[in-house]
Image 1 (cartoon, rainbow, N blue to C red):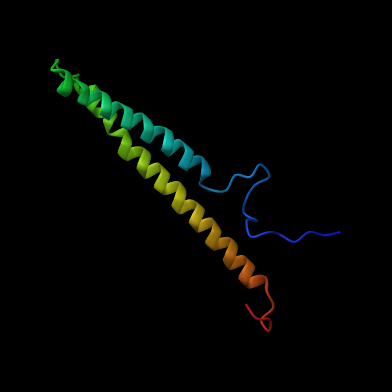
Image 2 (cartoon, rainbow, N blue to C red):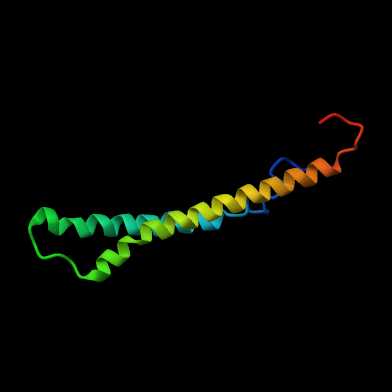
Length: 97
């Protein structure tokens, strides 16, 4: 009994697709940046001394995380397009679709 490849034939054995790791890392980095951003606003509301510059630099991790997640998304899209292109070339020319 032979099985036909599914639409997600680019997935590896453990279910991960290309770009999934980048998306997860991007989510973690974005969350750390968002947390740092909230923390840097606390002195504004509490009336205390502002944090050092390093705290504000950590806030920039939001943008880095967003870029990483976007790169992972684009990598996944590219892999799906390559898989669809390969699948399209594998079909006989006379058959529909």
